[in-house]
Length: 189
Image 1 (cartoon, rainbow, N blue to C red):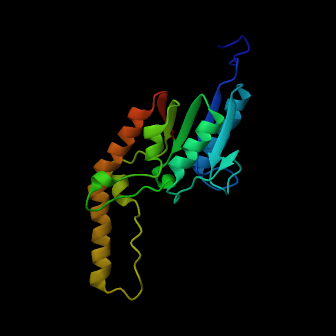
Image 2 (cartoon, one colour):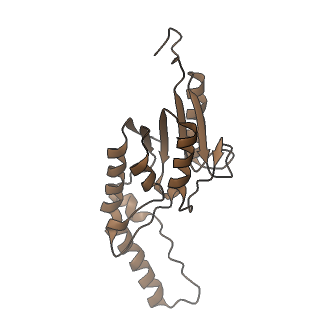
């Protein structure tokens, strides 16, 4: 309940989820840090889980960690927050594109969205329009001794992977929207 001071009594407990968090560089981490500072000023109890290089209260999640969902569930079960707020930048959660079967496009926190019983708010930090999506770099690991044909073939595979996964990337985001019981916001960084 809100009291006259504008604070919630008892304070709402929020778990912020962001692989990036200061002192790590990155806009998503800075955004999360400013969000935490302001929520605390408003009287909320706020904790952060981030990469081991960040200064959050919890660590262990990361871009290439296939166990992100399990780690998040363990922390949610341990601290029982009222709300989980995920800073969602797909690349920070190991976005995997499948060039042959785009329906298998996924991140390493999809399972958390499926199993978490606590309300989730998601801030989408990337919602790529088609032209921007097609210009994103996908590592193709060219070598100096690759022939012209091999380099062209790798670039065509990269282009094909982006083209075939554009729709599935947005479907993945729509699934997260549907799981967000508490609401959704979009950042304008």
